[in-house]
Image (cartoon, rainbow, N blue to C red; front, side, top):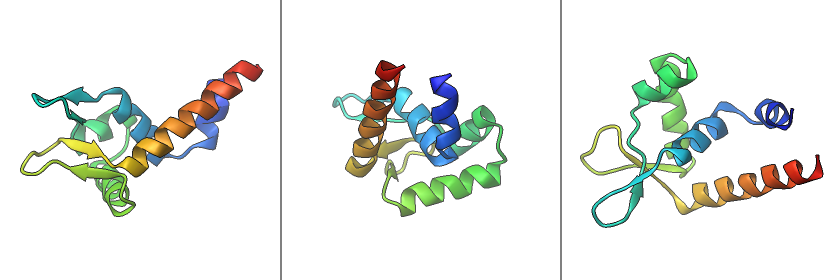
Length: 99
């Protein structure tokens, strides 16, 4: 039930960020990155490629997501995105404790 409330209260931007956060891997230097392309996100979330492209553009414009240099389909979160994700996770945990 709680998951349904959180899903209804958040938009696609947050849902995509949260999914991408859960799929991060580390490179040879230990830096975390997301190996998911816009096409893969579109397929996973049942959206068009155009919608996914607009979403990724907005995430970049909002300084939440940065493409890795010369690497298609690989991204890194900004510090701002990590703060948002960690605070939303805290909120979700608090709501779970209250139920």
